[in-house]
Image (cartoon, rainbow, N blue to C red; front, side, top):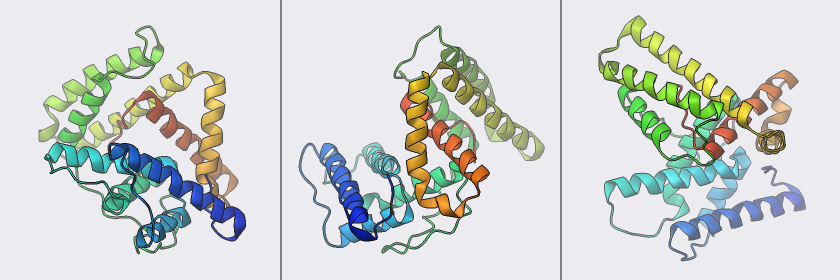
Length: 247
């Protein structure tokens, strides 16, 4: 969805944005309603001004909830304010993935326009996470599809790479990182090939809407490339695919 908030239509857009986030927070709080009002509403309006897509906000909420679950933190309500660092992390990753990371973003009310620093993850830990995601049950998977055959080959190669990942330095590490980008591209190419044309068109429409806040600041060619990168991200999310590339 767009993030323009000036004028009547923009206010409607932000209202819908907030309502959908409220509904998602409700689902993460066992059905208990968590209102977005006052300073929290100003914070969410700031995300809309930055052009943070709704699905990025929801993924950030998921990341906060998942991390809290792994820590075994005592049960307490999930408020949108608690999720902001994770939301900004996911937004930063999204901008890098679609090629708009270099564009200047206006600061929102929280003063976090450029997001928070990315949490460092070692190459070995990254490989562990990717392998776990690739071997988990995947929506719509079918053993005979090109994508599933590509994933099987990727898991074998990543498993072998993980065995020596901690000792990789210099050129060897750079080559491994380059190979991860190649595997990532191969998986996404297979996912595209298996995807029905109508679903791909729907992804392109969604990608164009997500990138609309940045449209006026991007040359046509850069915008087209960003749309395709956003399509890859949406397709990966829908198919349950992790990002294999290590940035």
